[in-house]
Image (cartoon, rainbow, N blue to C red; front, top):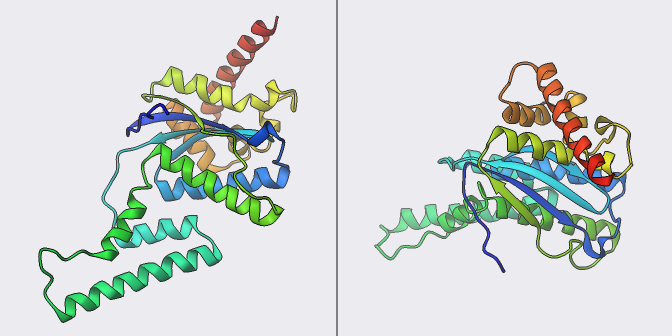
Length: 250
């Protein structure tokens, strides 16, 4: 396998197809995918710039910032954002057990140089999954697969092989084109007449007032204050992308 470039302060266009290119994702599953996407974004500390969840594949465009030092409270907040119900209880239970174990060891004896903190190892296992495009995708696909299989009596992965990736520095023109291409997916497939009519893409969410979706476009276009200006710019980018597709068809 080709080694992936894993760097910070870069944009990553991530795409994956479902196994057998089957149309597994109905409207409910696509809504679940969007909700999970936001949870994984919160856990991993990346910014989702754009997305489109289709019936047989998805596109996600993210920016990965530099890592930062996190206190235990922030790590726990991110864990609570990602995990649910039994999985959350199991993770938090292990966190508390290992932390209590370390506290007890430190009370009973002064640790030697050979002292190994099992709690620190467990804590670090979560940090390794943050600020990393590969870990972002692994977490998203694994959690979605487990959720789908549990609800649909399905076994094994629902995705087709490795995900595809294109990465680049956060250059404005490239971000404009990439996000526009993602948002016109449903239009290109003939599902909708306008990109904002497709519920499971970031532009539709932003048009409806979703603050997280608008934050992504503010990063892309460098304007955090005026959504109307951002919308005009992005609609221009989408029209240009549409024209290129129509010209290629002709």
